[in-house]
Length: 545
Image (cartoon, rainbow, N blue to C red):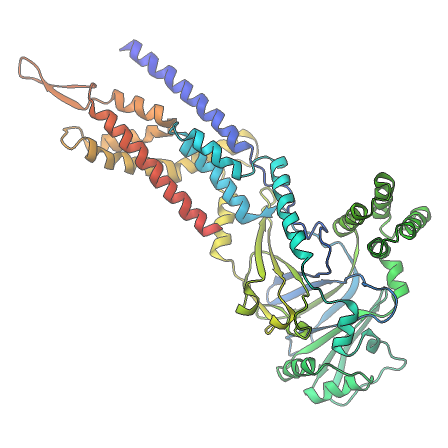
């Protein structure tokens, strides 16, 4: 008996070692890098970026001002309808760093993390190890693999973006019928029925908020500048005025001042036009002046020039990436009250089959109401950081202009999909760092999945393999606990259990460990265990992807 016990102890030690080695599979998972190409500046087309905070019925939108496609000539005007019946606005034009998306796509990360956890379950039965290893190739594990995986995904998106027919600066002005020049007047004037709630000028930008009593008054106000407004836009503006909306109108009105405030954007524009020498001279001049305007950023771009030896495409991409990640951008901040998050789209529906991409970042997880016309060309991504536990939502819209029939309404509630994925990524732990962090996750996962399934499957398997037995069924259920020590631990436990009843020569009943039914019992248990855990895995995966 002592010899048998020693063998059991040695086996359990080997099994424990196997579990420790399996955990290294889990530790290779990493979700700490930034995987969003747009926030890293990896795009070649103009996009309208919005950063949104929503708290206590107040919506704060930061609008990043795009660099002009052409610095010569007229600049386009933007109209942002505001669903606010009162006159309580807060508007500012300033410089900000807006790049707060951390972590990665929570659905992808949770899917990979879930696979890692369930891989421990599958590998615990030993025979699926080879198959699990094959499948794991489709799930990037370490940081390097994640970077390679996301690079491939980004390349696909960049190639797709090149096929988009984007609205140009000239087309925007021509289609709308007026430019940002309407914001520049020698003498301010009010029209009957129209009130200017605010006028803001800074860093080459001008913005004003208008409130009209009726649509006709608003149109007369615009016509005073001698503009020829697009008829479709007239109908859209009328509809907004009738719904008691106000309007934020903004644009670049002093191009030289804006150029001085945003030199990096102008440098990128020169690179886009293949004017590398001009761009280099500007970078060198700004660097030598050692001004405070993005000084570190300019130094980084200068180093890109030196290291790349004027490799045009690479240089432009690196400069844009540096600017978008680290540069201070000229932005317009506007705060207003709203029942839900509101993003106006209808004013951009006048450009027929052209595309004006929208990229909207929102703090916290939200539920956008994507209507049918834009659903096929929209994407909602939920981000999370495995350490900071930050929550962000990204909404990308690449629909044709004529499809923007409605504005985007976003409910301040968390979708079930994001809740489940976030829970998986932030599975409750006893400790936040070190090996205890990993062990606690493993133990909790075992309590939630492995133990309940093992106990139930072991109990049911006993009815199939041991139809007639005097052994209490709860003992078979208890055997399921040993599945935590892999299939080997389970086999050892069932070997120890006396299941076969014999009658000796004296007529006394005795129980022995030798029982051929244990082989059938072990096979049924293991197959059912793998089957049920796979179904659970697929069901959870279906909820988060």
